[in-house]
Length: 278
Image (tube, rainbow, N blue to C red):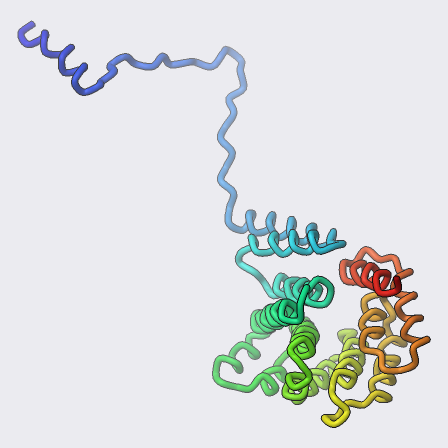
């Protein structure tokens, strides 16, 4: 055929391989495996959330907490409950594993931010109030139900940040902290009355005497909290803020050290108390 001598040259020049790959037919009776369906966004989020929750529940030391935080960073989008866990995780980071006051302040600041995100997602009225320029003190009045739990973690982190930053910051933040604690006291049906009492005791202990600090009132408020809830985490916080007699402080640390709990906050508190008693 005319020009047939050109095909070998063209094939060589273009690198064309005109040979067809053999078609492999499945063996008779062999099962045909269909490709796995792509994971939906919702399914992926649920899987990553479950992995993060498992990692956080297993937290017993710094490495465990860092692994849990890394796992939560892979979850998207985050819901109100996710932000609450992150607020707690960053509080634990600042309270137990900060190498310097600056590190503690950074962890607490992020915890407070996560808590405010939880409140904004859980209470649209709070988010709207903040977006339209309302003060934090005014906006928290719109919190209700579970969204008020975000305020609990906001106050705990904000107080931790203020203490880590210095007494002057505690004095400056006192008005907002007192308004928030009073709001928690009015949410007693959510079981936040013990938390509010302990926070008030911690605040009074952290304030300089000249700026409203009151040792006796602090001790009374802490004892009120412990009469309601005396888990290891609260016992350690009480001991660290304690301004009363030394025997009572040591008793709180010993009770905390002896406690056995599966909750990360209490487990970490027990370990910390043991180190303080050495």
